[in-house]
Image 1 (tube, rainbow, N blue to C red):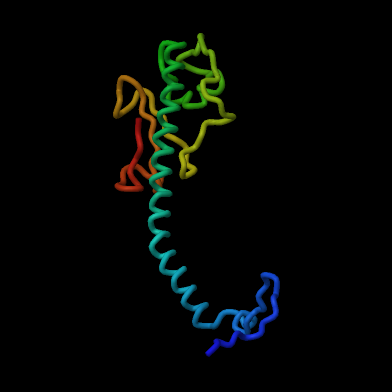
Image 2 (tube, rainbow, N blue to C red; image 1 turned 120 degrees about the horizontal axis):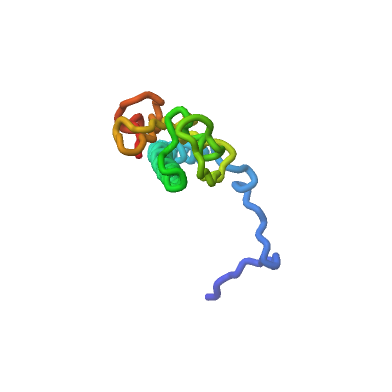
Length: 158
């Protein structure tokens, strides 16, 4: 008994497309894929958006640290920190008013303007500080842009 071998002509590595491939995906297959994508998005999205606020908080801390270093350099040159009225602008341009900046060697930061916090609000600079009366207070009010708060709305200070 010999096995019969069907007579096939060689296609040189190419297959002919099956009828199923010509028709595309079924509606059920598409719905399953959409449901899987939805489930993945519902799991991943909250983690991603939670990290966004954590990243902004970390960026605010880093900016406060950089501004603090610039203020310390200003203090080394002039013997005092800029007044509240002179503000953080004293790090970019020689300030007017009292106390005079006779030994100003700025700009002390490499930006065209005083940076805003990651939420787009200006940093509050108070000298002498209420929290740090010997130095200054540098504050970002966080996501809510108001004093106080908890979590993402908490104030970030030097």
